[in-house]
Every structure is written in C-alpha cells, then in structure tokens.
Image (cartoon, rainbow, N blue to C red; front, side, top):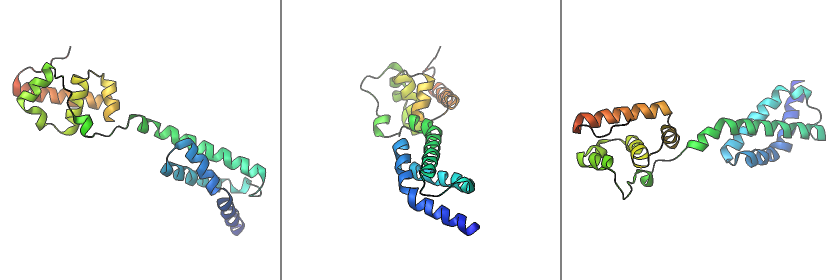
Length: 170
C-alpha cells in the first residue's frame, strides 16, 4: 500500500509540479515564494493522498489547482505586510533635503546627526524633515510604531541632554 502511495505521489509530482509552480508564481510574483507554495501544497496533498483518485484524471487536476491556489493565496497574505512596508535604507533615504528646518540645523550644528546610527537618522528625517506620522515612519522603516516612538524619544532625550531643547513636540 505504501509503495502505491509513493508511486501516486511521484506521478502527481511529475504531472503537476511545473503547472503548480506557474499558478503559484502568477499569484505571488516571486520565484522563492512560488517554490515554497508548491512544496506546501504537496505537503497538504500527502496528507490526503488516499482521497485522490487517478493522477491524470480531470477531478484530480481540479483538486490540485484548488490546493495550489489556496496555498499561494495563504502565502501571499502571510507575506503581504512584509512586502508592503519593506523599504531598503540606502543613500537616497539617508540624504537630507536642500531645505533644512530649524530642527535639522540645530541637530547638524551640534554634530549629533553624525553620531546617530542609520536607523535613528532615518527616523529623525522622516518625522522632523518630512513631517510623517508615527504610523508612516513605522511603515517606511519596517519597525513597529511603538518602537519608532520609543527610539525617537531616546533620540530626543540625547539631543536635549547635549544641546538644550532642540525638539519640542506638542
């Protein structure tokens, strides 16, 4: 019986692996995730192998299409947030705009900007220079909103301790 199941699984893999990959890629637009979806779909199929009929039957083909679509959509939903908010921190992100406000000029004059790590600089820029909300800063830095607020609070404390009152948010 076990040999029959492994032969059925092998036949399913031979027939449907590539079509499943194409369906998954159409949903996910990512080669690695599409491969993961195919793998996860086959794991699901193994647990239901006894309920699957002949590998080349239209009923089996329809079932496999449902499984791969469902698996791909699940992976898409799990990774959607990551892809929506993922933004690399590069030189353009770190670049200060030509118009510098009082906050930035005070920070630059005090030399504190250079003492900040890249994430701190981005947080200060997005919040002070571009005036983004906490939620927007969190999305752009791929951090939690509470983490962004706490980091900004620590940055503000560091600035206030070294050069007097630089930033006062009401």
